Length: 240
Figure 1 (cartoon, rainbow, N blue to C red):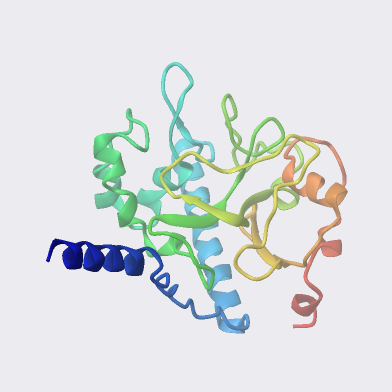
Figure 2: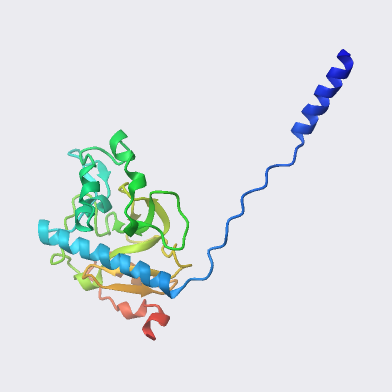
């Protein structure tokens, strides 16, 4: 009897060990890019740009990532513009002197406004593709307080907010770092094409693979270089 029980136990163990792996859940393809999707993202960026300008009218400068007294980044500019996109109640729930991942602020990640939600591309809850350029040669960052009228290269020549290649948590002060040489990857929503809001509030659709030198001029707010933005516009957009 004991031998029969042992044999049955061994057989069950072998069957469990060599059981076929569970089938992976099939993910539906994204499908082709539609004009409706493109226009929706353009509209979103117009709202972002308007919020930046309204913030500028109130404070005298563009929003920046919130920093502590010792210079540590706490919350993103996306949190700063909440009162300017009709999200005052959500803004009031944040503790502005705490980092994005504090016990209080972390609970608000899943409350991301629809304005920041991905279009077409997939991302985890609370993540967005809308980002700005930061770092030594970016628009925002530690010690920077540009406003619409104080951008050295001019507001119509400088990028404000773009569709990045990869999403970030919307409350985290995590954006596209530009060191003056390596241009961050863009175009995660529409297979390489991307939209960008300029600091003057206009929104353009850009083609894939814009020349790195031209991109650097569009990103850096104070390089003193002449920009011909028409060279970067998506040809399909120009035909409209």
